[in-house]
Length: 208
Image: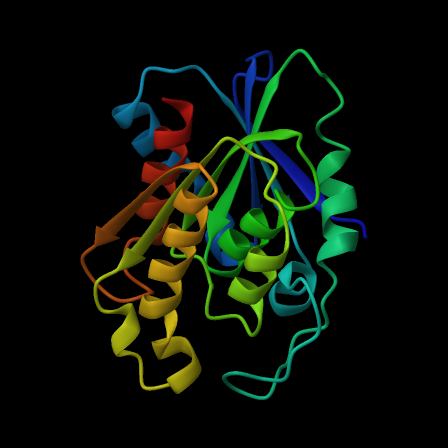
C-alpha cells in the first residue's frame, strides 16, 4: 500500500508519534499539535500517514457494513507494512495512535509488533466485530495504552456502535489483567466531538 506521509514537529526528536489520517483529520493536525504542546513540554516528531480508504485500510479483517453501504476489506496488514517503514531508526522511541478506526488500528498494531512503546487510542472503534475476542486470544506487545471515549458515544442509534461503551470497558479490563499500564479517560460529547483535542490528549499522555 502506498500512502502520503506528512512530518510535523522536530524531525530529529527521539520520540516519534505515528498517526493514520484521512483528508478530514489532516486538516486538524496543526491545532492537534498545538494542543499536544500545551499539554506536555516533551519534544516530538509527528508522522501522519494518509490512507486512501478509511474503512478498508484500517480494518484488521473483513467485516460487513455497520453503517451505510460500505463494509470493511481488512487491509490493516498492508497499512502496517507502510507504518513500519517509518520505524527504521532503532535509537528512537515510537508511539502509534489515532482516532476512531485509526485508534482501533493502533491497538491492533501492537498485537503484531513490539516496535511501539505505547498506544494512544482516542475513541477507538472497539465495537468492531470480534476485536475484543481477538484481544483475549493474543498477546499484546507494548508497555502502555491510553484509551478514551465520549460519554455520549454509547447512546448512538446504531446498535453495533452503541456497544462501544461496554467494549471499551472490556478492553480496559483485558489490558489491566495483562499487566499493561492503562488509562481510560471519558470525554464530554459524542463520537464527533473534539476529535483533534481527544487525539492530542492521548498522545500527550503516552509522551509523559
